[in-house]
Image (cartoon, rainbow, N blue to C red; front, side):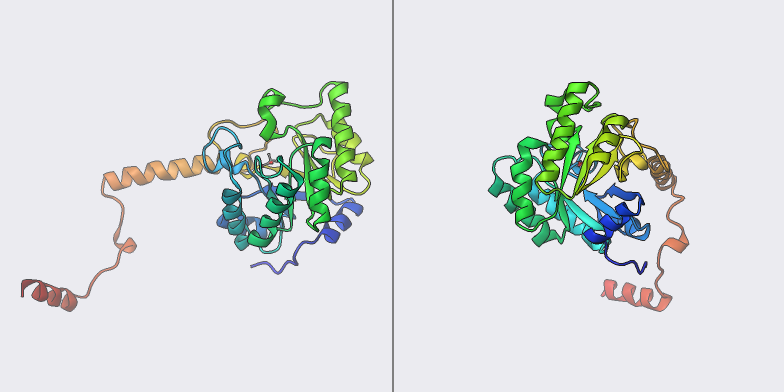
Length: 285
Ligand code: KIV
C-alpha cells in the first residue's frame, strides 16, 4: 500500500505552476483503480466511455447516471487518494442547469468524487457555472466530444480548419470564465492545444491525442493495454498488450480443462480417510 496523500485541487495547481505534467487516466473498476493508486496517477476519470469499453455499446449514449455512480463507487474504493472525476453521462446535464447540478451532486454525495466533467463549449457554460456555484469542481471537454460524435462526423480530429479552431478557442475561454478548473482537449491539432494552454489563466489543460503542449495528459486505460477489441485509436500508445496475454491464458484454460490437465492436486483440497469413511457410513445408513 502506498502512503501517498490525497490529491487536492491546490496540489494540482501547484504542480501546474511548477511546470510538472499532470497524469490522468480513465478507470471503471476496483482492481484497476488499485493499480492506478499504486502508480500514483494524479487524476482518475470514471468516463462514460465505460459504455463502450465495459458494457459493449457502440457509443456512450446509453450510459445512465446509475451506471456511472456504481462504477465511480468501485473506483473510489480502489483509489482513495486520486483526484476522482465523474463523467456526466448523456442527458444528465443537457436539459437544464438544475438537472446538471443534481447529477453532479450525485457523483459527490454517492460516490465520493472530487469533481465532475461535462462535454461542450459556450452552450454549456451556464451548466458549468451552476455546478461550480453549487461548490462542485467541474472540468470541461472540447474537441472530439463523444456524446456528439454523430453531429461531429464521427470519432475524428476536430479544429483542423481555422474557423473551427477559433470556435474551440472561444469555447475554452467561455468554460474558463464559467469556472472550470480544467479543460480536456480531445483530438485537436497540437498547435491549437498549445495556443489554448498558453492562454489559460485560471484553469489547466489536459490533452488526449492533442500533443505535448498541455499541462497534462489523459489516456483511455483500455487503449493503453489493448483491452478494447473494436478499434485501436492512433492517439493511444499500447504500454503492454494485456489483451493478448489474457486471450492466450483463456485459450490455454479451455484446452487444459478439455484435456483434463487442469486442475492439478495443488489446486484442490482433500478429505482425511477417516472423515471420508464416516461419510460413507452416514450415506449407507
Ligand atoms: O468518457 C471518457 O472516457 C471520456 C474520454 C474520451 C475523455 O470522456
